[in-house]
Image (cartoon, rainbow, N blue to C red; front, top):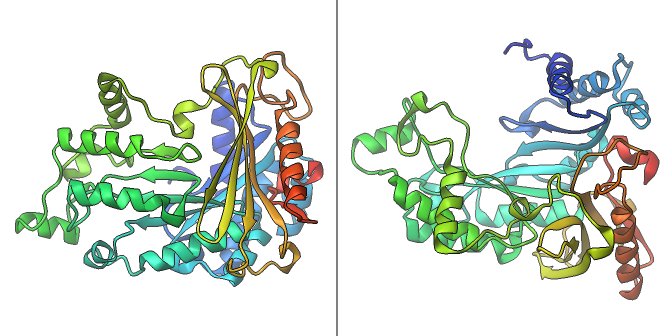
Length: 387
């Protein structure tokens, strides 16, 4: 609103705020969130993305293609581009368009994997469509983020825990956002609450539910959020605590337990001794793909870096990209630790200590051992010159 909904102004002001707080801005993961991106007209999408790149490049371009070429060597490079949409919007044609824009990660508003709950809440899609969307995204090399909502109309704490377990039955998100349902005035759910057909969970119930969920998350998945940032004065009933993640962590510590998701185990800014790391390869089935979560562990069980490698099955859906047909796919390489400028080095920092190269070598060796002659890597626009 402050930037008049202008993409150039939004990105520029965000970059300035990061610089003012001392953050490096040469590696930019750009998240375009809110609403269903694929429902916008394509000419608007193209213009919006172009202007975002213009802001990162610090100059105006004549076309999206020109802006992308400039960003390959710009001072502020795009290392990831994220949009969000619905599961039933994912098609081969749509995925090819998203790659043209430079998208590398897709967030899906799934909310539930129970068809009865989806129908009661008028979501307009099914669990089968979600599974198909996840399979297509992986077949296209994209990173997959799912949104999940406990306490929807018709749900109970028990049904929510059962539903959470379904996330690992083929859907297998790389990242997860948990959004406990919050009751707002003027919504149809509010009317159900007034008639007694809906009851928000009390705080103890919600904290217990989320603690159980975090204990069941798979180690290859990162829980990005456990609450949506809706101002508490808009919430009519249910959770209003913005500290919900800390409340859940306190509950787990009181039990003597801990969450093993990526966010809870990343090394963050801690120094890393590359020689003390242990290489691990976690293999798991994800729908129409064999996945390998290759990672380096510190002696205290923290993750210093990881690589996501996919081997699409013969029945994997067509992602609309014939150039990667029959290829093994590197969907993500991520090294944690202190952020280091592109091309620089820093003692004790996980980034630029060779971990990325070592992970790529492991992926190449495994790919060759499985008889693949081709290994494709999804690349953000700002990383194309180093791929």
